[in-house]
Image (cartoon, rainbow, N blue to C red):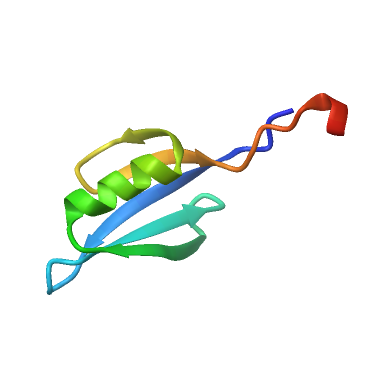
Length: 75
């Protein structure tokens, strides 16, 4: 069974070259800052390592899957 859900991601650059990874859930009505990285490149690499099926719509916006697949024997 697939309990994953899609989230939107935004990379927000700061004034000191850091970049925050913002995760939007529930169609953009709820968000969490999940990571602050040293650069845009580091933020993108972190997202690629921590989310599934990442697709970038632009250099700062994308979407991915979070959650888990569950073996039917556990349900």
